[in-house]
Length: 380
Ligand SMILES: Cc1ncc(C[n+]2csc(CCOP(=O)(O)OP(=O)(O)O)c2C)c(N)n1
Image (cartoon, rainbow, N blue to C red; front, side, top):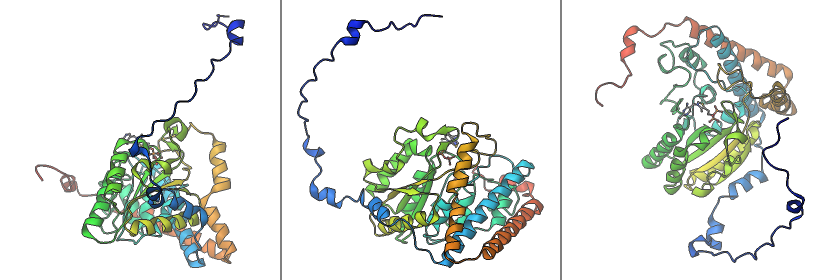
């Protein structure tokens, strides 16, 4: 056997005493480092988390709970169908499914003013559109590249857009939506329309430089924006701990005086309650909030990822013990909603998704002439 290159420590070395610790020198405090008590009191960095910890779950009535359930089931069934159509070769290009994360988009966007507050996200975008009331048919038709798709069949899964719904994409460049969202928030403030922007991004994206440039400007100008980090545990195949020095993402705004909130993204009622706290703060003109939504994606990063970097048991445990839809179902039953009513919703949802898929398969592809429209050429 080859000898170890490192010699074994000698007896003398083993018994050698550690040098006596030097007396600690007095820390030199520069005047500007000192935070005054007044500053500390007015700085709301921790106050929102405190408000959230004091009252975690939204008190939804049965109708609201049903709506949450309906939307979350719609997203799940829609995504499952998209996965099937992809497998059949009917969807081309990239396709990132949102299965497992439904409570995030539904809980947050249910607190927004649909069509007034703006929403922007990355490429895992179908769920956010459904949560904003956009017709499943036009989303599915975009996935299959048909003219009736929301981006006329020319954007596909990652590039969907609807100014009418104030949904601003759908972005394939990781993190790019963060400065763009900051721009949307600037527009809300500039126009004085009272709107707020919700900018979603992932745990991986949150290590991008442009994110912090955006944080700085948003805080400096007190822009009405909520930065939402969807921490689903992985950036492609990289687990959070392997890629991030600070894994408490809600603390990432501290250097820019942006208050953070640490939220269970698998509980739609907790998400909704946290949204209430954040929105009240932002709408009052205090500037941005950073929310970390702890969630999990059940499928691979995209349809082409077999997800070999994690065990089946890990995924199964999340599905069995933390599934957001199951949790809402329990809440519904506790609220006195019957199993039959829940089954009716499930049936109706399957029908909506089947109709969307039929539409997406049978409607025509864009005309060849469309290749030259909506394309940036010449000068603008
Ligand atoms: C600027 C840039 N770098 C790299 C990529 C490749 N890429 C696509 S998704 C991804 C991981 C992002 O993970 P995360 O932000 O955690 O979001 P998630 O996919 O988990 O929703 C990477 C590196 C890209 N699209 N853009």
